[in-house]
Structure formats: structure tokens, C-alpha cells
Amino acid sequence: MTVKDYDKIINSRLKSARYKHSKNVAKEAVALAKKYGGDTLKAEIAGLLHDITKEADESEHKEIIKRAGIELSELEESSPKLWHAISGSAYIQTELGITDIDIINSIRYHTTGRADMSLLEKIIFVADFISADRNYDGVEKMRRAAYKSLDHAVLEGMAFTISDLVQRKITVAPDTFEGYNELAFINGKQKKHGK
Image (cartoon, rainbow, N blue to C red; front, side, top):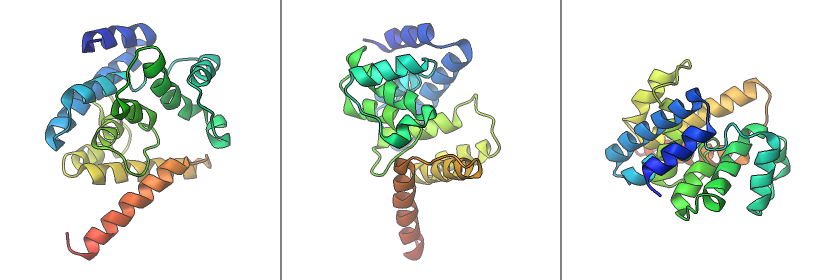
């Protein structure tokens, strides 16, 4: 399939605002891939497809996840906001035939992040935070961070997510804590050694 094919698919599955968001994330992902030496085609595809199941209802999410043989953890089961990343990564494999593990994982972890993220995973995580349609408090700071240091932007994004969820007394995915701790540790070591 081509990028145009994927574009048609998301256009048919998403409402106008979400479709526009996906296009913006793809555009931002390509820019970040150029900046950090990533694969621009993979970045565009993953950006386009990252929310492919975002507007699915509960039964469709569960059916896609079940068909892919994925068992949700208790925390995932109780966190419907995480489902679209899980079902989206399953959907692109089972329905679109995508086998590239980097694209699959970049969609799977675009909301939570995780430890040991690949370059593409970081790009999609950050592109989703800073796409042109985003307007939350702090988005301009995130945009500046994204073009100074991708790792710093991921760390900022995870810190923002954790803080927001904690303030609302909502569970935080273990992947987010692990990713945050990994990057905070690396960042602390670099500061200690004057890098």
C-alpha cells in the first residue's frame, strides 16, 4: 500500500478533526525524522495511522485486540484511553498487513511511551504532542524542546502525562513510568558529567 492508500483509509475511519490531526502528526513526524536522521516514509505512515482506531467503539476495540491474540492487563482493561494505541497497532497488522515492527511499536506506544524507545517511537510520541492542531498550556515549550533534543522532548511529554494523570487521580501506565525513569536517569547522569 502507498501513503495515499493509508490516507484514504484513515479518512474513511475518522471524523474531520481527527483526520486533520493525523495528517498534522504525519507532517510533524516527517519534519522530526529529517531533523534526527529517521526514516521519513515510516514516520509519515506511522503518523498517519497512529489514531486509526481512535473512534472505534468499545466492542470494536475489544474485537480487534482479541483477534490479534492480545490479552490486556488489568490496568489496560480498566483504562479505555489506552485501547486505541493497542487496537491500532493490532489493526494495522491484521487488516492492513503491516509487518514493520518499528511502525507497529510506534503506534502501540504513542500514548504511553516506554523504556528503550526506538527513534521512530520517539518521533511519533513527540509529533502527537506538538502537531499543529495542539493548543494546550505548554505546547510552545514542547515544540521548542522537540527541535533541541528529541530525548528531552520525550521526557517532557512523559512528565506532562504523569503529572496530568496524577492530578486527576487516574492510573499511570507502567510503560510511562519506566520510560520516564530511564530518560530521567540518563538526563541526570549527563548533567552530572557536564554534558
